[in-house]
Length: 181
Image (tube, rainbow, N blue to C red; front, side):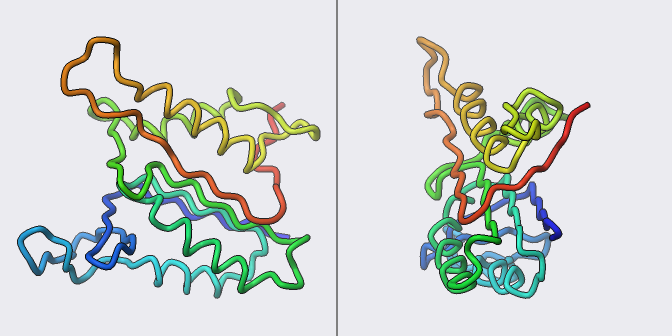
């Protein structure tokens, strides 16, 4: 009945094979454009670790550049784990950016834009489910919409990046995260 939450706010990238990875402090670039790397945490390692966690409800939150690159691999993990357990399990991904996008930082000394939206949602801004809780699904939807709004280019801005578009994936059951009093 436990819910496992794994949160990472760091650097992320897509490697030469279009696989997402988290950049660790000892990651080394092996070529000029840093698509061949050593020492990063690969999407395969993330998913293998997830398989070993006994909690049937899992939320992976990645506030990194290119974190949306994990979404197709995560759906394969869900399919492999839940042929008989789908009704009792929930596997959820909050990726702050598409596989092709950089995640935008907040103001110096603050959280990244996506993390800031998650925190506002947890504090009560996200909609409640019918049980009066902020759930995995309602928080994810809230953070996605608010991140897009917060990163929309201002009208007339020169050299503006397109809005950051988080990838929110849900497989299986929703679960409550926060019950506000």
